[in-house]
Length: 232
Image (tube, rainbow, N blue to C red; front, side, top):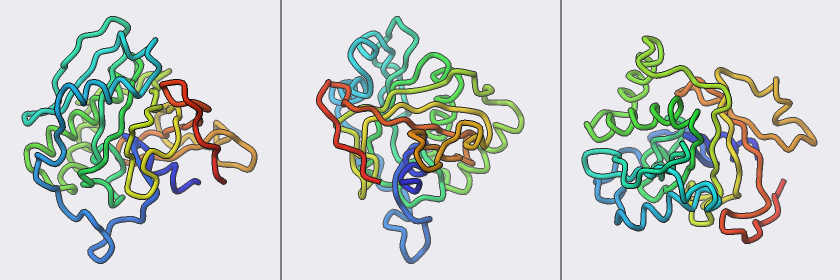
């Protein structure tokens, strides 16, 4: 379960993310970026998928961004400060094999704090991806941007919904489990009592984003249908 948590980062993480072994020349099924067309999808479908990250009471009034050939762009302007977006594999920890997985679609709906201070990391990574940068260059540029404060400091209260039945997080776990994610600066798992026997809180340190992502499973998908029971 802890391994699953780590790859769901980011996840972005990163979350985004999945149960996977670190990439290697022998085991990495996605050693390089696929053609860009494989990461794109019809815009109308992407809007629907992005909004499925959260209950309609949240996502119907949220901003929605979609991935285009030139990068992410706002397709729908909302009113409640939330941002719904479908992340691709490069949202997560660069050490995992699903980084370049063209099937990954991870709908997130960030609250205002996360939209303004956490999502910019993923948007910057996407610009680097579309500029043809290597994984190593993406990690190095992200680190420099954080060191030089070119990216905003993570705001208190940053969180997102990740409750879409249609999410595809990785080849092994696929849609896994509906959950909420909370973003905290640094490596903070122990301060929340996460990842210990009996605790409902899962956490993973994301070194690329320099944040801990806490995850709490939900009992229902965003459409109200029951979620599968957690398997320990």
